[in-house]
Length: 298
Image (tube, rainbow, N blue to C red; front, side, top):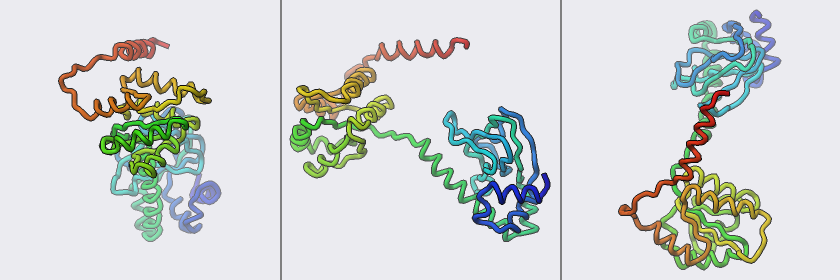
């Protein structure tokens, strides 16, 4: 594929025409070198020096960060934009999922573009650098791990007033925690008690209970206060039961009424260095069993 074919491909299949003229694209295409690679090949490796920009002409590649798939790239898409930044290293792995044809712009070939068309070269550098920065922001969002430990506050509709009353009495203690609440509970806690919520989730029936459960499994919940209505049926009963089960699995203290909640607050506000940690034998046994399953040959 010659320069003219690459220029026509870029004009027809990439986003470059939105920013660059045909002459600028042709000058860029003249520095590209076409290669073919089989399926399953690692084209770029995370944290290695970024020495080239690649354009996918045909086939498909998967871009991954650790074991998280970032995206699937197809013909007309670029990867390796970090070559144009001060960072100078790849932030993800790129693996071919099928045989591919790529056009590569190496550092040396970009140097040739700088010599022959310096203004165009600088424009391309700014363009690809901006794309890379956007990808970095997305990467940071994927890899962000919330290290805070929260106290969960949940209440069924008929129990919200009870929770407001409890929160009003114990506001000074509750203010010492990062608080997470579901649905309108968080809004009411702020409006009626003046408590700031660090994380607000959807209401229970819309997934809030499951979101709390996820936080429990990730060790982000140090205690859960869940004022449950014991005299009414609930459409998301299974989610409610799952919360209690997860608290048992991860040994998270849980209170379901004002008396238990007051005791829970007092417990969490006091260090207990004299208390030996009680191993979670059930969880350890389960994890060991899962390791054996994974270790079994296919």
